[in-house]
Amino acid sequence: MNKQPKYRQVADVLRREIANGTYAPGARLPSENDLQQRFDASRNTIRNGLSLLVSEGLISSSQGLGYEVKSHEVFELNASRFENLTFPQNGDAYNTDVTNAGRRPHQTFRVEMLPASQEIAERLKVEPSTKTVLRFCHRYVDDVPWSTQATYYPSWLVDASPRLAEPGDIAEGTTRYLAAQGIEQVGYFDEIAARMPTPDEARLLEIGAGVPVLLWTRTGYSADRPIRCTITTFRGDLNRMNYEIGDLAARSDNT
Amino acid sequence: MNKQPKYRQVADVLRREIANGTYAPGARLPSENDLQQRFDASRNTIRNGLSLLVSEGLISSSQGLGYEVKSHEVFELNASRFENLTFPQNGDAYNTDVTNAGRRPHQTFRVEMLPASQEIAERLKVEPSTKTVLRFCHRYVDDVPWSTQATYYPSWLVDASPRLAEPGDIAEGTTRYLAAQGIEQVGYFDEIAARMPTPDEARLLEIGAGVPVLLWTRTGYSADRPIRCTITTFRGDLNRMNYEIGDLAARSDNT
DNA sequence: CTGGTCAGCTTGTTGGTACAAGCTGATGCA
DNA sequence: TGCATCAGCTTGTACCAACAAGCTGACCAG
Image (cartoon, rainbow over all chains, first blue to last red; front, side):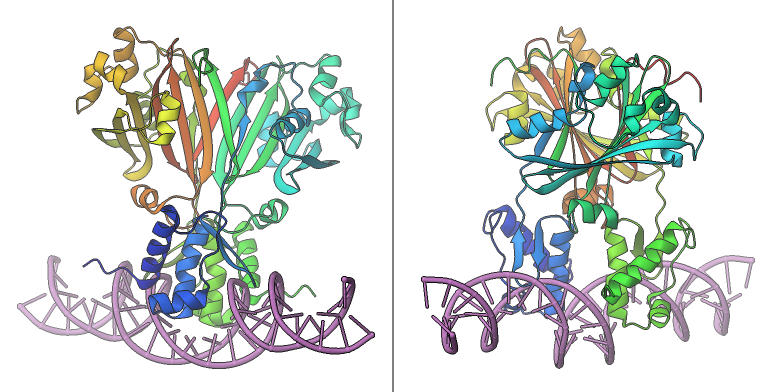
């Protein structure tokens, strides 16, 4: 007799029923009231159980509507493709990827100047609080917030390549612009982490409880020193990152 | 007047105080009772607010003890290092990494035979339900559960390299063993995802609410076809994955 | 037919109570 | 001294009640 608390039993039963398809993705669960009767429990107990499933990312709730089983089609993101250093990394890759997937891309953009945080300063190898230029993208897919991307450039680079600090897009892509200025990116250092979103991130990406964010930090290097640091924040439930390493001729053979 | 619910105000205030160091990592928050008086709210409201912070991964609670601000020292995991294909990928890398960090590694190990799931079958390019050999590792750092690693081998490979199916470690590392059998891994395909843990994963990794898991799926290829699929599950709050791409001579220059 | 209102469903918020169960330090007995 | 016990703290579980607020479809007035 491993007596589990009642609210866990509720969660376990519903979790199993979601797994075996009793409640399919997109379907609505019975209302709290119905579940109260089914499990002979108080509304608080039912809510405790449901909140477990919410924080597991299995269901979501909305006032007036009820609880819905979440569906999760993930979006693949090939991160090592950029090894091809002539590929423009900004905007274009995102636009073509999304369009190829038959979805509609949309992004807002802004440029600002601000002192480097500890994190950014370390990666760009500059003193903390040094001025940096931030180029910030907020990206949507089919009008659903998808990711935010913040790219920081050190001031010495901006002095030499002033268009970085101008508002508005750089049509040919920043990588090509910098290459034309004689600054070529020859290597990347990628860091990937996962955590729960801060309230700010939850607001920007419109995610509720139970959805982690994927943090992708890419530091780009010239032959001499770091020239940019890009921090991309993804919805963890909708994205998967891929890296291809070595010889993968056998991968695309068949299938 | 953007009237926020009281429990959100509680969470906001405490979140800010955690951020600015009023409550440092490792410190204990005031008890629910104290917070009730401070915020003039019922215990339920206080608990609602605290549960927000728990699900954000900022604090954790334990019965009888109280709420504690979580600290997060992350463990760096260099994933692209394995591009050096002579490096044994199993166990050794983990052991040396952890030991170098001044921590104590410990792992349990088991081998079993089971039919391929849809997921595994696709990646190994075999029919679903085909027999595969699973070599499973449960790894600890300083006796804290750290990750689980499940490596699946297709049956055709096991037929040719029978030691894969034997229980117990392969001393020289599976990669070297397979190379000695004439099967060399020449490429990897990595997929990285984040989500909230299933109850099973939460149990194995001993993580509570508010901590996502990082899923690292690595499919290894010979020149002909896929030869293994490794799924590693990390605690998201304690691990960060790194990839080095291209020429990073400038990275280790100074600092 | 159109448009607005509203009843009646849903979840969200806040208050209360009671007891169970885990942890710690003080107490007191051997 | 050493050890068991227990009081008194903590959070965990479970119940009840009431009202707020969001959504939908039915209804009714124009």
